[in-house]
Image (cartoon, rainbow, N blue to C red):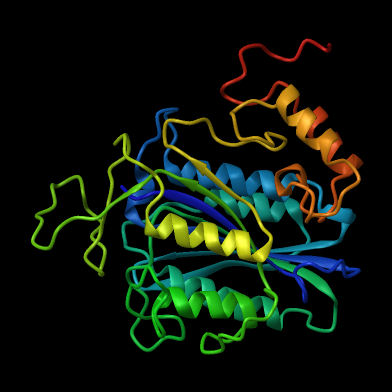
Length: 324
């Protein structure tokens, strides 16, 4: 139905600075709405792809080898659920992810994301920590309860009091009503699958379009060959760019991204190696953010190691690694 996205949000106190973080705190936030059951061309559902990508993050070594705490939340209908409180037990995190099932509701994205920001800010506040939200979702905000801090009308131009305006403020300052143009408190890394259509008022949905957006938009069924870049994708891209994060757009027909696929072509190979080498030793910025695979704001041996460890991986690799 709508598009599957993976949004990772980190909170350094100053986005472009290099503070000496002591820990990393991550909330994995999963969209369980009904459209997440849509099937990708590789046979997996969007929800399953999101779970696998979340597992990759959990199993991937933290930048700077920081101690990490994970919590797991999900959302559908008009609320969110907390499946696991912050823990350092990686196996418990993986078991919890494996046990979560997709639901049938709609998408209270703004409500859940802004609540997750609050949760992160309250967790171990005495520690200078890199704080992140990893959001896996396939649709726009459409069902946050009226009166909650980030609920609002839809506005592609981020009009005051729209949900887009409030969420951006929340990621920047921790306050949905504070639009001060300060350096982002949260860096956004986004993987987005699929595309959106906007229908004319009065359009009657077919039975396959079960999830109807409250703002008059309807998601696109999997497999439609439509341009990805719409207002919502543009908004996500803005959050990533402004905050110094990453955004990758992957169609339902594309392979699931793998670590080390720096250029996003579906295979970890010489193209990725070259990008890392060309930026080796640079901080980000000015270095290419794509080459900062482990997201520690420096292109270094850690990023090179990820590329080499995953060489030949990816659904579009013509040949497996031969040890060459």
